[in-house]
Each structure stands twice: as structure tokens, then as C-alpha cells.
Length: 389
Image 1 (spheres, rainbow, N blue to C red):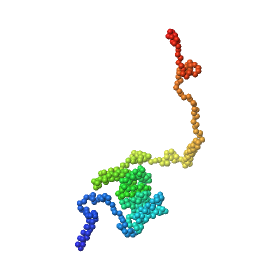
Image 2 (cartoon, helix red, strand yellow; image 1 turned 60 degrees about the vertical axis):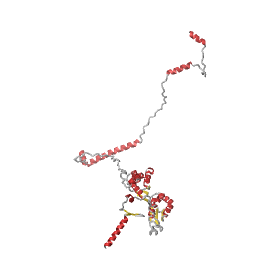
Image 3 (cartoon, one colour; image 1 turned 180 degrees about the vertical axis):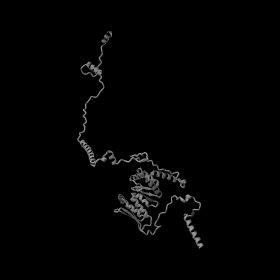
Image 4 (cartoon, rainbow, N blue to C red; image 1 turned 135 degrees about the vertical axis):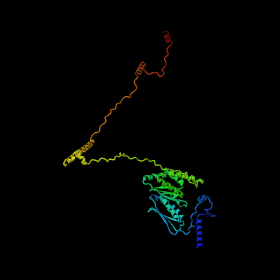
């Protein structure tokens, strides 16, 4: 009995050691051997998982599995156009696809020739993306091994519709710039449609896209997450910082609530505290006792009430009559203003200048003046007479 127990223990130990060792083509390296941690956790560059072929599953699948999804009415025309391409893409992995336009659904199912059991799951993701307005050129990438998809539901994360639309537009950004930056940093294709966000790409990128989308719906601007992604991208290029903590490099954005509290329209001021209760309001009997109406007969009371009612009725009738008579009162006409053509006020008339012009006119002879007047030359003897005089 003791020998059997010892053998079983040795077998268990060997199985445990096989689990915690790295098997390569040439040798077996145990974790107890002195190795660098970077060699254990780092994936070699250019490593790729081998593709699943028919040799791995030559007998095929035993049972038929199928998936179906509904699509909106506005996607019907596009699906009609690209349906031959969908059938061709799924035909390579031996999966049958049917389009029902009456019911508005797409169905994919396995066949006898299907050898890859995961191919039908990829086909299911393909029809889901097509129903969520993702173009066929992008959706067909889900059939590759390294690709995955994530459909994030954002319709129920925000209560009011107006806030939901604003935050969804914030995720898209002006002219789609924010969404484009997110696609470049995560190597994913992102499509915002209605109440869902469809993402297609590698697993690490999908994780970051989901975080950014959910934070945006929680009123955290996507530019903060995009900034952290840019810093991480630069840090990952440095081989020395791969095994170190990046918290000291990443920015710490704190939420600041800068909105002021809305003040009420009607402000109530608190009265000073007094230990005495407020004075009790007077009842109708107290008022009647003060005026002396309490001791009058009922007939007199009724008569007084009727008189008050008649006075009020007369006031109301007079007001109504005034309002009716306003329509018959002619409006006041504006006095007609007579237009007077006044001469423009000129500068003061210079009388002396007018007199000088009149004098010149008198001295001039009648008749038209000569065109080129010849200056008159006095004879020489006249000058001699003047000098003598």
C-alpha cells in the first residue's frame, strides 16, 4: 500500500511540473531555473497562432447550430446589394446564410462540410454588425482569426434624451475627429448608430474603446482618455519601461463641478425665532361681533348681502359698458401740417457789391464787346501837354 501511494505522488508531481514549465521544440525550461521575467511574460515578435484547418477536424460537426438576428427596414436596400458578397465570404468556411426580407431577419447555420466549430460564431458576429449599419468591407474582417467585435449598448446609460444626444455627439466630435483619433490609437473600427456603438478590431483595442465610450456617457470627456492612450502608446515603444509602473507618467484628471447652484425665483426670508405662538386669526363670528352684525336678524343680514351683491353687479355692468363704448369712440385725428416752401437761407446780401456791379453796367456802352480788344495808344503830343500843365 505504501509503495502504491508513493508512485501516485510522483505521478502528481510530474503533472504539476509539466503545467508550470515552458515547452519548446528543442528543450524544456522550468520556472525554477534562473531566467529573466521579460522572457516568460513577453510574447515574441511576429508570433501568430496557426490557422485551424480541415486536418484538425476531418470528421466535421455532429449537430447543426444556427443564429438569427433582425435588421431595421432602412438596411434592406443595402443588404440586397451586398448579399452575394456575404454568401461568398461565408461559403469559404462552409456556412449557409439566408436573408428573409418579409420577416426582416438574417440566419446563419452550419452544414455537413463545416469543420471549424467557431466559424458559426464569427458568422453570427458578421450578421450583427451588418444589422448595426457597419459596411460590409469592415464587417467581413470579423472572419479573420485576430479580429473580434463588441456592440456596446448606450441607450439606457443616460436618463434624459437631450443629454444622451449631446454626449453621443461628444463621442463623435466635430466632423468625426474624436472618433477618428480613437480609431487610430486603438486600431479598431468604431461605428456609432442609434443606441449602440459597434467596434471591430483586436481584443486590447476593444477593451480601450469600451472604456472610452462608457466614460463619455458618464460625462467624462473623451479627450482625457485619448490623451492617456497617446502617452501609453509612446511609453510602450521604450523597452526599459515595459516592466515598470506607468502611473507617474499618466495624467490625473480630477472632476471639477463648476456649475453654480440655480437660485429660486421666490426667495423666502426666515423670520426671527420667537417662543410665543402666532396670534390666532379672527373667525367670522368674531368679525360679526366686532361690527354688531351678529345681533341683527336674519332678514336684515340677507338684505345687506343682497345690497352688496347689487352694488358689485352695478360696478361690473358699468365696466363692461365702458369697454363696449370704446369701440364707438372715434380716434383723435392728427392736425394736418401745411407745407411751406421756404427759400433756402443764404448768406447775407452784400449791397455794396451789387452797387458796384450796377455802376460798371452803366459805364459800359451798348453793343457786344469785341473779341480781341486792341489797346488804344494815345499820341505823343497829348503826353507833352499833360507834362506842361
